[in-house]
Amino acid sequence: MPPSKPAPPVPDPPANPRSRNVLALGVVALTAAAVWAGLHPGPRNWGLHAPGFLPPSTRNLLLAAMVLSAAVALAGLLRPAGRAARNPSKSKRAAWPAQWPWILVVAWLGFGSLVPVKEALLGDSAIWIQAVQTDTLKLSSEPLAGRVLGTVADGLRAKGAAIDPSSLGVVSRVLAVPAAALSAGVAMEIAGSAGGAWGVPLALLLTLGTSQLYFGYVESYPIAFVLMLLVLWLGLRALRGASPVALAGAAIGVAGAGHFVALLLFPGYVYLVLRRAVPIGRRILELLLPPAVLVVVCLLLRYDLREFAHPFRVATQSVDAVRTLGIFQRPYGAFSAAHANDVINAALLAAPVALLLLAAGALALSRRWKEWDPRLLFLAAAAAGGGMAACALMTPVAPVQDWDLFALLIAPAGILGVAVASIAAPAWTRGTTGLGLAAL
Image (cartoon, rainbow, N blue to C red; front, side):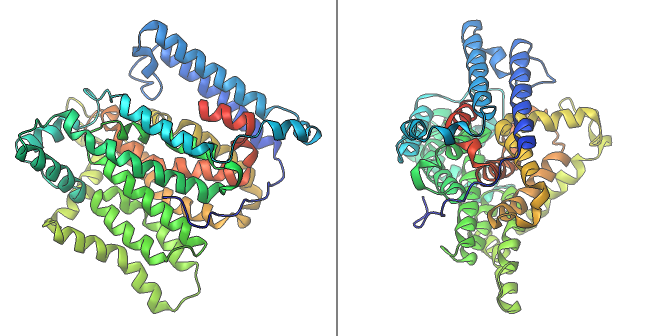
């Protein structure tokens, strides 16, 4: 759902050669690591080694495409800054049509409708399918998402249809439409819509690790992430007065019912509330709105509110290394090199290029942090909780099996990275550089 009044284009800030060089080195390192991992897949590089399980010809073609994409990005990054200015006519001829990002949305939706998710050994899809088949689904930490899948399963059962990955996967394929539309809306808010400038940011958002949640994945996370995108889009609109702040607060309550991980976006909402000059009473009411909506939705779903503490209790216990005794549990503590490796792999799986942009773009803004755009401050506050949770959380299963949860935790930081690049160094999301980064 694109904004009715897109954010105006932001003037390009002065170039920062140091941040550009950091991004270039990051592109080289990421590509080299991906190629090595693809040729030598193993348990310690699970965030990058997926190509290694493809047929050799397909694997080599994909790795070659990665190298080519990196070369294109580097060619744009290392091009002399004055070349485009000296050849304005050439730059104009190279401009893409203003509406080309919508073609990207259609292509993404088409790809997702044709390509099935390979989920047999990853995530909890089999558990969810078995639960709805036997009508033993527990609402757990995702009451709204669980109710949606349970209702769909009841409808299939009433029609005598099979309850399997194909039939239940339709839920995520349908949700791909609002996911793409909301991604487009977020891209417009952070990059403006003039001249298709939001195209590369949109491509970077659509290729986050959360993208495969919409290709037939059976879990609560496709529902949860759509609601999280809705919160971020409404928050960005509220910053420019296009929608009420309270609407973003109500969305957090609904998103929290979709999955409790969405409640980690609450600090971003606090920023929206506190940055305005309004009476203290109104601020208090607005801050109480998300938990109030969450409770109302849970009551409507007949969710036992005493279960609220369960996911937080599990998360707290998971940090205790003494409890990691199961076959899939990790025999190391939260403060260890092995756990750090898991966190890095999760980040590489969820948002590799976007997090590179975050690091390099933050460097470009480091000396003028007081001038940070309100959109960046909002997204930073919204992403902080998920980022910290991803670093601290040690789930009681093999970390790669919880890739979907970690992708949800890290995705807001990835969106922040795209926003930082679009606002602090917009040249990175345009032309040859943008094309290379999006392809990578």
